[in-house]
Structure formats: structure tokens, C-alpha cells
Image 1 (spheres, one colour):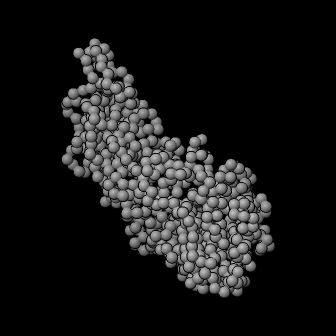
Image 2 (cartoon, rainbow, N blue to C red):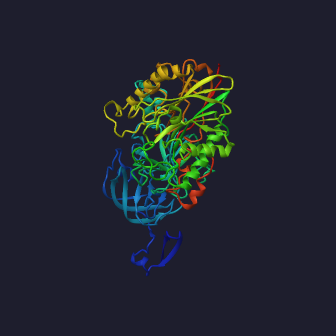
Image 3 (cartoon, one colour):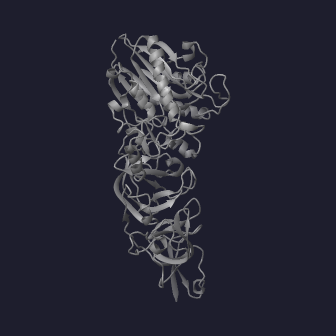
Length: 624
């Protein structure tokens, strides 16, 4: 007499004499006993219950089909997902996670009977397996249809642990943690809009949009709970991510199929959340399509072009950095060594060269003066090496104003580049009020047609909450911390332009650009609007469409272009150049937290992902 069982290390069927180990009821490691699978079992739905926690705990026996095999040692999930035929209660889930650490006992499609302890673990119901019997193989389960947006924050509880399918075309709304945890956030009906980019903080529609956004997103995750995986499985067309096979926000996925889990990504930086895990699931699929292609050109109408470009901590100093020239010591930022700086510079030059702007306002460049070895000089030299000697020059604000370290005492500053063949600087002023962490820089340019325009580049206080007190703390209105401070910066800037800049240059044409760390309908921008400055991104693109930054799965623009009353009609075109915000951060120049292969495969000396902000390109037709 013989009995049949599966060796799950090889997947092969093996036969053992009844007088051998199997005949004694002893199984070899990595095998599951073939069984008649009779007797009483609990419906998985009765264990899951209709609430947020397990309805039954303690020893249970269940029978079902393996819909996802995630066995093995960490960083796998160390178990598998089991789904039965249902208990006819739509409020309860028919799937459950079976925790079986270190084992390799099942395959997708196996019908098995499991006995073990049911309990709640970090918000997900699971059974810790003690015995497992193989009942049959080659079973199929029809995935349950789930759609976004959700009806409520608890709507997915009824599908926990089940095989589900999202038939909609879903849009990639964020991939900030794609490189670190292999996860992508998707939403329905296009990308999620930053509510304060569309509505003022006090408008009830702002809070309503925020509530809708919260119910209209889901994480698609890989099969592992590890960090910095190689390969990163979610690129386009079912292929791994690489510099040449990106995954952009705005790309789409349809018919995503996998098990629905409530788990973390293995680290508190990506805590427990609802995740669709297609890898390892029965007919699992998440095939992302290039719905949002990379831009090929960056052109705007106008006889003078101005760009606002956040260069994301462009430092050419790796040790001994200071807060401004001769200031207190601070940590260096950006590239950590010469090799990384070379990679960063190559990407930055590709971006600036593609913009081909006559004037470029820079943010987040090292505040180390304007000497030959300064960061701004290094960047300009590299740009001229790529475009031709003397094509670009930088504004030396210290020399122009006669004030040492006029840019402020922050580790970073704003700066200005220009093409001498296109425009000539005739006046440089700095608003050096210490209300501004990075002092605004104003440069007035004259064109060959003898027209003038003053460009004021800014970098307002960030939304980070460190040190915030009183009205500068997060007021819960979507504007985050330091909103009151940024609003004061906006009103002070406008006052300085009217009282100092315009009289000094004798011309009212002023363009305010830069990272104002404020979305289109937040108080600082509205304050500037009230003082006569028109949001030209809104005028030319629309605040419900434009974006230069993606945060918390929501798209909006922090990078502004505001025109004075006399300049408004001379602004002919505005373009958010989507080379950064849509791209995964892991495609940047950094080499840390990447395998030797990824240091090569995830990098290209191109203009994509040079920063976390998109540049803004403005076209002007200036009158004399």
C-alpha cells in the first residue's frame, strides 16, 4: 500500500511505502500529507467576522485554496493566503493569512486544510499554522471585484486576505517609496489633486476633496517586506524599473489582480496599510503602461524666456560645510563625494541645457559665496562646457550689492544664471531682511530691444514642522506648518518690491519666481494675488491641472510665476516641465542604498529626476 504526498521543495509527487515514515505518520521536512480533508472546519468568514478584528481566536481548522504563496524566510511574508467558498455573508472576508515561518509547504492552487491559532496581528487576522494537509491541487478561484474610490475607510475589511481584481484603469499617483519598499500608490479617474492647489484652506470644498482623495487610493506592493530590493519589480510593461524603463506618476494599470493585505512594508517608514500584492498571487498581475510619456522638448512662446529651477541641494563641498560664508558649521547636503557630484552635475546640466532659458532662477544651491570654487561657479562652468564658452554667466550678488554673504545664513541660497548674448543685468538687489531664511534675489535685465524686466527669485520657508510654535504649527487646514510665516514673507516681499526695487530700477515689470513652498490657493499666494501679483501658472495652465510637485500622492505646484500688473499682459506662455516630479526618486544620481548593478542600471546622465520639483518655464514678449 502507498500514500501520495507532495514534496514542496521540488514540486514533485513522491511515493512512500506504508511501512516507511509516512506509514508511521511522520512526514519528511517540506512535505504536506495527502488527506481526505473531511471533518468539520470553520468558515474563514466566521473567523474574520464583520469588524476590524478577528471574531474567533484560538485553535481553529479551515479548508480552502491557496490564492497567494508568500512562504519562505524573511523578507517574504512567511506564509500564504487561503480562501474558501464563502459563508454567504458579504460583510465578512473569505480569505485569511496563514503564518508559517520558514516553511515551503504549498503552491498556488493547492486546496489545503490548516489547523492553528487564529489571532489579530498588527491589524490583520491570521492563523499560525500547526498542521497542514493537502487535499487537492490545481484549483482556481475567481477574484472578487473591488473598485476605487472606496465607500468608507473600512470598506476593504470584507476583502482582507482575498484574491481581488481592480478592473478599472488606475493612475499612478505616487511612487516615492518605490525604490525603498517596492510600492506604488494608485487612484481612479486620474491623479489626485492637492486640495489647496484648487481651493482656499477655508473653502469647504477643500476639505471635501481631501476626504475624497483619502478614499481614492491603494498601494500596489511587491511580495517582500524588505528595503532597497534588487530588482525593483514595478517598471513599465511588466519589466523591472531602470533608467530607461521608468514608471511615472500619470502612468496607468488596468485589471490589477492580487491578494488584498493589511500589512506594513517591513519598516515604520511605510506602516500598516491596505496593499494589493500581485506577485505570487493566483494569476496576479500589475502591468503598468506608459500613459504619461516623458516630455521630449521644453519650449514656450516669447522673445525672452525665464526658468525657475530647484536644483535639490547642489553642493560641491563634502565636508566642512557652513551656514553661509564663514558661518557656523552644518552638515553638507547633496552629493556625498566627487563621484556622486559628477553624476549630479551631468543630470543638472542636461536639464538646464534642455530648458535653454535666457534667465534661470536657482533654488537650493550651496550658500558658499561666488568665488571660482563655489557651487554656483562650478555649475556655471559645467553648463558652459556643455553649451559653449561664455554661454551662461552667474550673478555675483555679493559683488553687486557690496555685502558679504548677502544671500543669508542658511546652508542653501537662491541664485541667478543668464545668457549674456540674450539679456544684460543692469541692477541687482537683495531683500536681506532676516525674516527670509534664503534672501530673495532681484536682478533687472535689459533686452537687445531695450526692454527691461526684474526677476525676483525666492525660496520661502519649508512646510516642515521643526521649531514651529503658535500660528506656525499645523492648523489642520491643509497648509501645514509655517504658513503664517510664509504669508508674512509674501507680504514683506511685495512691500519691498514696491518700496525699493521698482523705484531703484524705474520699471514696474516684475516677475516673482521660485519655490514658495505654498500651493496655488494657500494664504501666501492669495496674499500676493491681493497685492496685485497674478498667478501666471493658474492663468495659462489652470490650478486644477498644473503641478510641479507630488507629495502624499497628491499633485500641485509649489513653484510659482507671479507677474506684476504691468507685466501680466506680456507673459505669453508658461510651462511646468515635467522632468522630475513624475519620476521615481530612486532614478536620481545617488549611489547609496543601491546594489552595484543598480548604480549603473538606475542612472542615466539625462535630465530626468534631477530634483523633486519640476522647473517652470515662462515666455515673455517684453515692451519697452
